[in-house]
Length: 188
Image 1 (cartoon, helix red, strand yellow):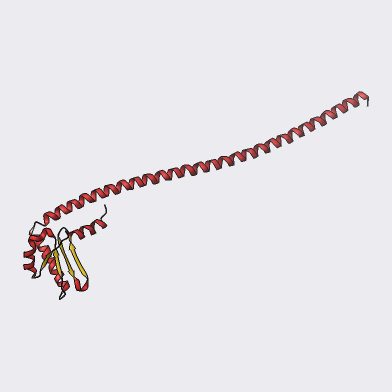
Image 2: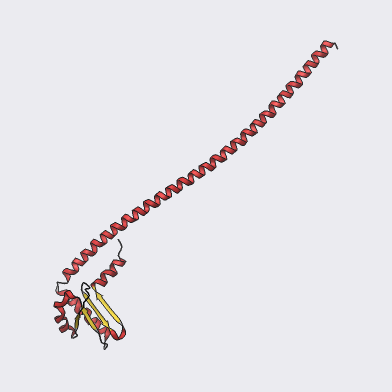
């Protein structure tokens, strides 16, 4: 082999080795870049997921606060309307009770309440009260029941109250108490 052939062979061999070394370096660098890319991609995806979850949680929380606020506002409005209607209803009931007190049936109601109280008390001493607005009915009620009737110093919108002192018993058939009981359990 001549020197020129040896040089050509050497050049070819050196070029081939350099090319292979170059390709290997490029391949390794490409693998490094691919790995770095995948790691960065995974890191960014994880950050995005964390941000997405955080933002979703924040939006859900804001939404829940808004819903809660709206719900409270609605309940307040409903309660106010409910109370307004209840007041109207009970004002109407009181008006009708006032009208009822002018009828002969009212006298019968008082007489039956007094009779029931007397039957309950039997032999015990009892004081029966009527509302101050019913003072005109006192004489008739005493005549019908055969029992003394007292005029209450406290207004109770009609009906009767009876006290059996020996037994510490109050029989409260007053319209005021009935209205208060109904109002406390009333709902729309």
